[in-house]
Image 1: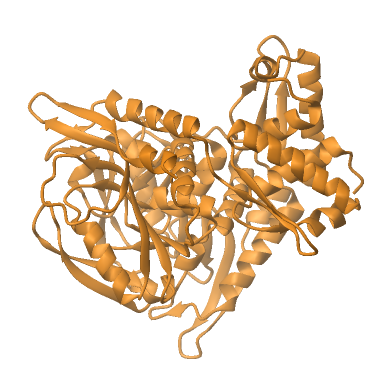
Image 2: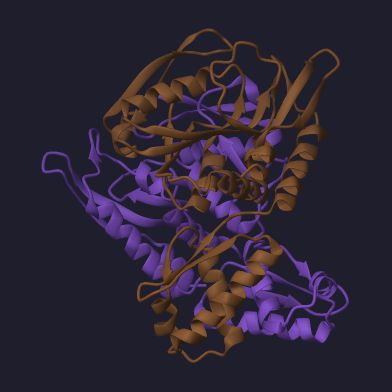
Amino acid sequence: MKYKRSERLVYMTQHLITNPNKLIPLTTYVDKFSQAKSSISEDIRIIKDVFNAEGLGILQTTAGANGGAMFIPKISVERAEMIISEFKEDLESSERLLPGGYLYMSDIMGNPKMMNDIGDLIATMYGGLEIDSVVTIATKGISLANAVARKLNVPVAVIRKDNKVTEGSTVSINYVSGSTRKIETMVLSKRTLKEGSRVLVVDDFLRAGGSITGVTNLMEEFNATVVGVSVLVEAKEVANRRFNDYTSLLKVSEIDEFNESFVVEEGNCLDYITGK
Amino acid sequence: MKYKRSERLVYMTQHLITNPNKLIPLTTYVDKFSQAKSSISEDIRIIKDVFNAEGLGILQTTAGANGGAMFIPKISVERAEMIISEFKEDLESSERLLPGGYLYMSDIMGNPKMMNDIGDLIATMYGGLEIDSVVTIATKGISLANAVARKLNVPVAVIRKDNKVTEGSTVSINYVSGSTRKIETMVLSKRTLKEGSRVLVVDDFLRAGGSITGVTNLMEEFNATVVGVSVLVEAKEVANRRFNDYTSLLKVSEIDEFNESFVVEEGNCLDYITGK
């Protein structure tokens, strides 16, 4: 296929961004376009500069015979601020308060554009760490885990609270739910997570942290290392939280069921991005 | 921002493919790049031609004052064949047979690259229809629903088999599981799906079709129209299936638990793509 530079750039841009965190050897493009390596290198440089200037991510290039390019989704601080402010506006906007002080968030978890943006944001926070798998708890966390895992190019492992026969042999633990104080069970199929993996844990909502503590205990059974915990929303006023080391996009407080009101503010994830 | 054509093409390519099924007015790019509309139109034409030649999707353009471009993920038959053959190889490869004739598929559902490819494939089959929402059943179908919904640019509605308090008021139905003959319950939050929606139903596995029949009954409660049903894998030898109008990527048959063997063949989705 003999393409001009402009045409090569279209192909290479889509190819790189649809294969994040994967090293594409320059030879892939040299062969595909029957072009000299120097021309392809120049193409890559153009893409890299635009991604930089627009805050779309980093195009990491490696030189030498095995040289190549890898697209790393890393958004700018400005873009991160925009994503959080959109999310905040959405969370504040409609009547989300449910009995028991819960927030209705299924529309947010089911919004692919918002999940995609938030996936970019969380991948930016944790993309520098070595991560083998994104772990979450069924059902609500799955959409978020998918969005993050796609950007990091790693698999998702879904922990369930019911033991279904259809996943083969499992490891389970009991834990105390921080909110209800009930003893519950958490189950992960043995085949879903490799022993000794480095995992990023994501979930939709953090209250007392009983579930996340449960996840970290379950991870020990897999000899896994939890390299980070990130949640979309945390309830701000929870005392005695069992888990302190995490990032959140938003914080909710002053939940008043009677007046159907609550206050939303930014979580700590921007500190995490700017502090890097 | 004053960019050269090559630089504009990088930006516009990434912008179009990360906003599928959304009309981007040409003025967006005219304003961003301070360029004449004729130059931007020429940029769009270059992107369109490369997408066409490479089978990456369709760039639909509309002329006039409100003219713009919309990226429609529509893969070529060759690419569809490749995705199905990769999926088939993966499903055949490892020891997937579980007690009861179930297949272990969590690794496939948790593989973001494979879900992305299959999302492209299913979006290609149903992208021509007017669809308001992708509907699935927790837990296994969620990753697939996310992948398809992202390509179609519509929300996901997740039906649950347990009634959690955290989703507000719900509609539920009872249905008979085709495999176990037990009566089970299916629940969908009222706020998750608009009355009168046109929905595409996706799921990981189709056996007797009791769940899918349940979904279609539940959709009636929402006055929704089921415009299609698509599953990753169907069990071929099930008699008395309650549901006939669906597409599947793969068919599994001759499941032999004693010898731990089964046969995988292509489903009907390629006919669906080529027949269009």
